[in-house]
Length: 520
Image 1 (tube, rainbow, N blue to C red):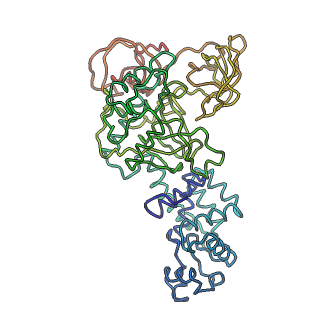
Image 2 (spheres, rainbow, N blue to C red):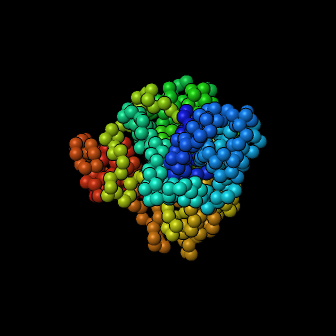
Image 3 (cartoon, rainbow, N blue to C red):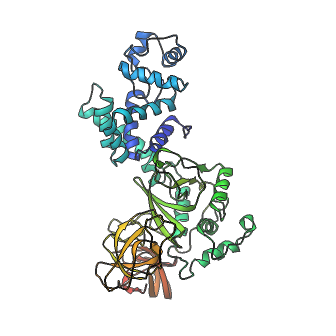
């Protein structure tokens, strides 16, 4: 598979992520490779250039042509990892010859590097695939794989520092707007996410999803001339409606089919095929539920089944908001390079101005430090193991991704397992006397509020809750800028406990939590 990226370092990072390494693991390894070779695959150890009479380029060419026959035994460090010992150089030479590649080919050296890690450094590879610490990854590579003469604390700190630079650029950068974004692009992305979140809680069971279908059908011309029905699958329709509301159709094209939507991004030159890409807020992620078990090492190229909009990236966890997720607008958490990722549509948010939803111009860009219940949680509406919930569905499943399951009765049940990202992400066991017969995996949309007691749960303040409120609206969560008065029942869009006006309702404005009555 061809390397992806505009620069060698970007190609290396994408390759390593594609092989299942965490962002911290890939960055820690890259910091060591930079210390060894400057990430240059044709690099020959500097002290040997004069001794052997070669430059990087002439040495590589001579080895490739056979004019120089002492590559294995000359003790000169070479390549990304500065392979030096005769047996490792011999193995490298045999590896590249078997592939008909140059000894200085970047992709082939990366494949050989992974081959070495798999064959003889399993403990190091395990760290690179599991750690969230750049320093831990860097030290594992330095002390157990590279093992240079200088393994001092200073050397460890220096190499970890190189790795942190790559992490900040390619991993943490996505979380913070990818570092190089303009203020306009960051705001556009934030606005798209805010529009998407304004639909949170819309669901088929109460017909509230119909307004999404109506907005789509009212925007002419329709994609392929097809008017959506309320009974159609509506995940792509949801993404399209977010774009319509934001005035972003020029860069975020509308469609009602996932496959056709991918084709539109491909025509725009804004399609990212690499499953291991670290997205930014506002990027569009596509799924294929039939992804194979070796997903971390392969690129999923099958037909897409589902689509959503990236809300945030924290470490190696992507938070997504989706329409038609268990028949509702809800959140999903998945790992970078996780299973089921088909690829990403990348709207060019620098080329448009995205309209913010009404009343959200002053939406905080991040949750306050004192918040314990903001919308930036494991997934709004997602219970935790041990919660007792009210199950409203009529079916349960033998596995979290089963296509069909037997009927069961609704009632009170206890959460025993979670499978974030699955079709049926919550495992329930019926509670005695609660009326339910559920014993299996169920849809998130079929669960109502949680409680630690065995009684029917009382509704509580949360993102997605329905509240009654009568009083003035405020410009921000600190109670500044009092505006018009409203009176009615509204949906909570943002919740910042502890703030004077910590509840944001229906895209209208901020109101005091103490003045709200939670009704559902």
